[in-house]
Image (cartoon, rainbow, N blue to C red; front, side, top):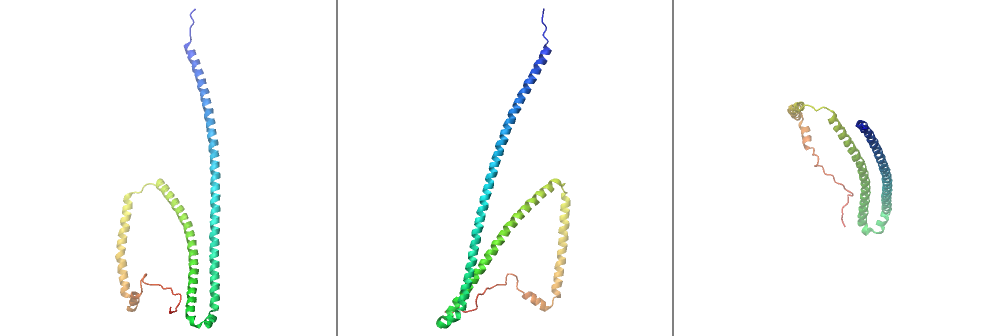
Length: 235
């Protein structure tokens, strides 16, 4: 007998086996990828934890350093303030003994008086310098905080402006040009009217008021002079 081979059945059987093999290979590949992903996730998590710990450690070190610097500065300011207080007390003692010193040493009384006055000036200068330095330090500190806040506000405004430009429709350029022309025309028309009003006001002024207005010194012409003592420097 001649055997008849059913090629269609054989083909379908081979197709089914091929499909099972593909599914098995894909399952093994998925399991391998899953294991690799899990290992990467675990490694990344550990690295992130380590970086976070290092960051916290650096922040703590920086905070401790800043606190130490602030303590040193505060001690220096307190020492300087105590020094100024001692100088003031010493000056008060010298001033209280001035009459007795002049009585015992009349020949050098004028010179001693000048030295005491000069010392008083030096004490005042140092005191004002210390006060000004303290105010300047506070202003710089506040200015630094203000600059940071202004920078943050500027960044927020820039971000909002970009969002508005993206979300809002484009305007017609002709409308903008017409608006600028109208504003320029109204501004040019208002200038002669203001000049005429100023000339009428100057004509209505009385001679006395004109004279006082003309004799008033301009800003920048006033000179300030600081005098610490009204004594002559005769040796």
